[in-house]
Image 1 (cartoon, rainbow, N blue to C red):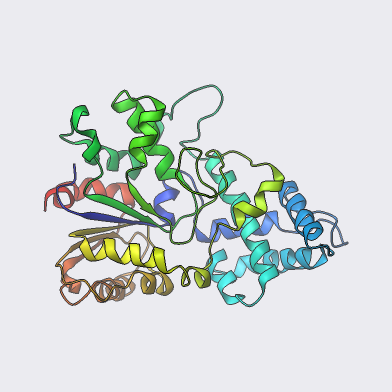
Image 2 (cartoon, rainbow, N blue to C red):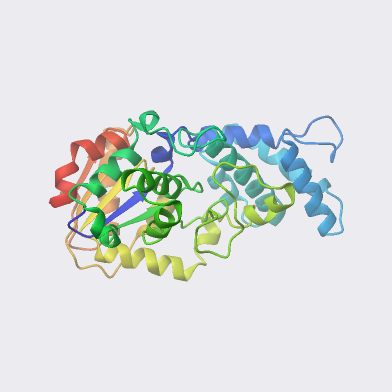
Length: 343
C-alpha cells in the first residue's frame, strides 16, 4: 500500500510491456491501415472498418469521400517520417479533415492492439493469464498496491495513488478489475466499483469507455471491434496535442495531483517537449521524490530531461531529486519498490 501521495505518469513504453505498439510502430500500422487500395479515391483503404467509417462520414456531411481518402493517402505516405502520429497531426492542426481521418486510424489501431495484448480475455476464459504478465509493471504495481492490505480495508486501497496516462488504451483499468476480482475474491460488480475509485486521467482521451466506467463516452469492451458506425464517435474522443490545451478542467486536475504529490513516477514516458509543458505546474511548494525510466535515452539527453522534470515541478524540486534509470517500467518498480512505497 502506498504510504505517501504518489502519482504515476504513464507513457507508451509502459503499455508496450503488454504488447501494444509505441510511437513509430503505431504510426507504421496506421499508415498501412489508411493506405488507399487501387487507383481511384473512394475505392477502399487497407482496413475495411476505416473504409466504412470514412464513407459514413462522407454520407453524413452530404459530400464526397474523396477529401477523406486524400487525407488518408497523405497520412499513409508521411508515417515513415514521423516521430509519432500525434506529432504529425499537430503539424497539421489547421486541417480538420486530416485530423479526423488520423483519429479514425488511431482508434482502429489501438482497439486492435488491445485485442492482441497479453491481457485480452477471449471467449475461452474469464480472466487474464497472470503468468503471461509476469514481466510487466502492471503486475508489480498491483503487488505494491496490495502489500499489507486486508480485504476488510479495501475501500481505502487507492487513497494515496493516482495515474496520469498519456495513452489512448484502457489497459490499466482493464487489468485492475481482473486483478482485484481474483486476488480479493470479488464479484465483477464489486471489482469494477472499487476500480472506479482510482483517479485515472487520460489527457489525450481514450478509445471509448469500458462498460463499467462512469463517463458519457461511447462504450467499447476491451479489445473488441466496435460496430463500424460507432468508430467516428470513438475517434472523436481522442485528442491531439493541440486540442488538449483547451481542456481546462483536465489541466487543473492534473496540476492539482502533481502539486499534492510527494512521489512522482514516470513509466515508459518519452518526455517530449509538449508533454512536459502540459505537466508543468507553477503552484507546487511541496518537495518531491521523482523516479523515471530512461530506457534507450542517451546520457546527454537524460541530463536535459532531468532538468526539464525538475523545472516542471516548482522550485522545491531540483535535478538531483530526479532519479532517471536506464531500464523499463517493470524493472524500475522492482528496484525502487521500498523508496517509492515508503520513502
